[in-house]
Image 1 (cartoon, helix red, strand yellow):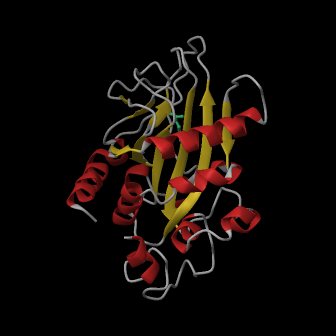
Image 2 (cartoon, protein in one colour):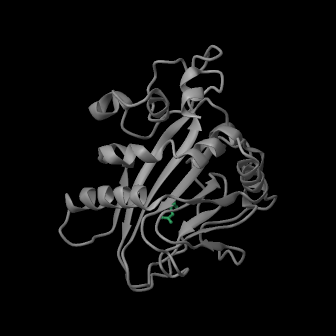
Length: 259
Ligand SMILES: O=C(O)CCC(=O)C(=O)O
């Protein structure tokens, strides 16, 4: 963990979100091509797409799960006992204004089940947005977040305006993160380019997966152990793991070789 990563972790803890950095161009292009190939399976022309189990849709997409700055941050904020329990691919062509608010927090009814007001819920998920096309303006379909809303003491409703919302802008390859308790939304895409993006959620390994099981994706079986952990390989018990046993544990030889 570099001091730069620690600073980003502090920003996420306090503000609820941060831009982590930029992917190098070859990786960003590889991910974009993969998303385009997946989208082309359903239509020859760009259509709105919000495809769950995103990472399982194309073998090239697994390359994002252990991008070092992101992984260091997820481990710092959560622990080494993490994986990606939810991912989606998003393609949004330009469209006329909808007036839709779309504000929400992630993780469904978890807080209601726990009978905890949302401000008392623990952090269990770090959500990641990877822009695969440029988002230069809020109206290019930017992801928008309400800073510090994970620490709020008042309620918010999905249909309310959020004047404190901050649209996240950046070129293709921008990687941003937000605490899943933060209020966020996708803005309308009133621009000229099709917005393509990939999202994934790092969560504790004992939190259930919403994605295709690791065993159902044969291409993942021979990946390095750290990548396999992140994609949901259950060979190490999520509840009781011994020191050094978990590939992402700093005491593991896999972790030391990858560092
Ligand atoms: O597409 C976006 O910018 C927003 C994504 C989103 O709301 C989510 O991942 O929960």
